[in-house]
Image (cartoon, rainbow, N blue to C red; front, side, top):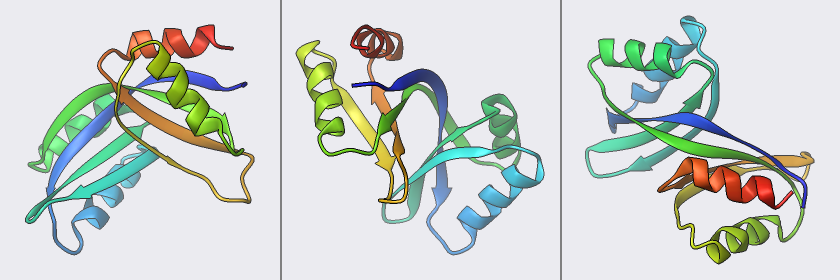
Length: 136
C-alpha cells in the first residue's frame, strides 16, 4: 500500500454545544488566515469537543484562547490513503501487529475522491509514523 504520513498538532477545543458556536470558531480562524485541514465534533450534554488540525496551530491556539475557550493539544498522524476497499483495515492491522493502539481516528472521502485523509491519535505519534513509514 502506498500512502503518505506526517505528524501534525491537533487542537481539542471544549466549546458550548449551542447554535452558532461552531460558526464563530470557524469564522474567527478563517478571518485570521488559519486554514482548517480537518475537523471532528463529539458532543456531550452541554459541551462539544471539537478536534481541529490546522495549518498554523500556534496562531489558532492563541486566537481560541483569547475567545475564552479551553484547548488541549495532541500530536496526531495524518495519513493520506487511497480511497480503495480495505485500506483502512490494512492500516489498522499494520498498527495492531506492531502493538500500536489507535485511541481514536477520523477520516472522510467520497466516491469522487481518489484519496482520503485519515487522522490517527495514538499514544506515541513518532512511533506510529515510523511504523507506517517502514511499511512503504
